[in-house]
Image 1 (cartoon, rainbow, N blue to C red):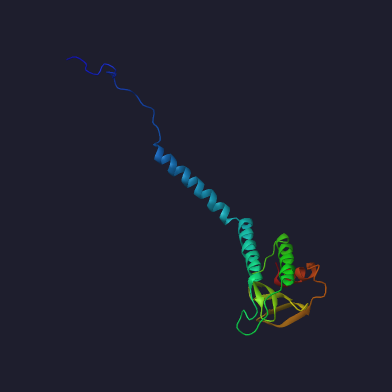
Image 2 (cartoon, helix red, strand yellow):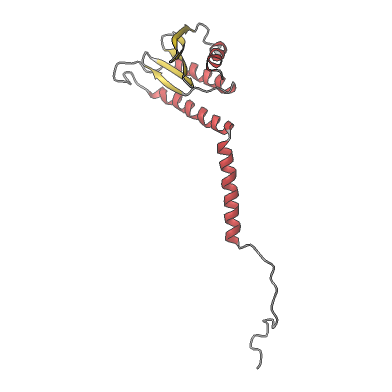
Length: 165
């Protein structure tokens, strides 16, 4: 019988095993996913994410209006928000971040810290009054007025010591 496919070889061709392309894509996708997951789980990445959230919260306070809490509270002033931003940057450089940042009912910004049952906060008031408070379920609250707000180092060290960070 004549060969009607003359270009087709008459003997079996030996192919090298090749991983199908869709398997390669899945392997690359898994590797990429694993790399992303390890990055997201790293503490420095989480600190950066937390810092960004806190910073965004501060920036959002700029648009607050008088009576934001429906009890007549003053909105944080731009000056107070600026002071809190400087403190947040300083805290981030010392590897300690507040648990949350909130507007103060007295008008200003409050940075809250929590470790176990111990809590502390720094409140920057629009009126220029700035306080550091420490409390827990096992002790009476301690409130200290901060006099030198341009250098938050002492307040930060007090909080780190109190929370044992």
